[in-house]
Length: 75
Image (cartoon, rainbow, N blue to C red; front, side, top):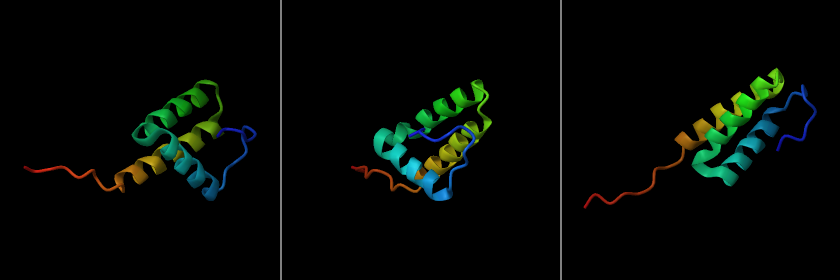
């Protein structure tokens, strides 16, 4: 998922595709996975990579909020 050159900016379509892949692979844990990736990029000084992963975190979080809740029985 992180095969691009450092510092190469991603298009919105590429970021959405990455977010979709994160959700399919990790489900509800996608935000945690993306947060760990962002932290790693920040620690290594890769600010462009950090910004990309922060975009992914916001996007995935929003996608998860839009997911209908699981049905629960009231009785």
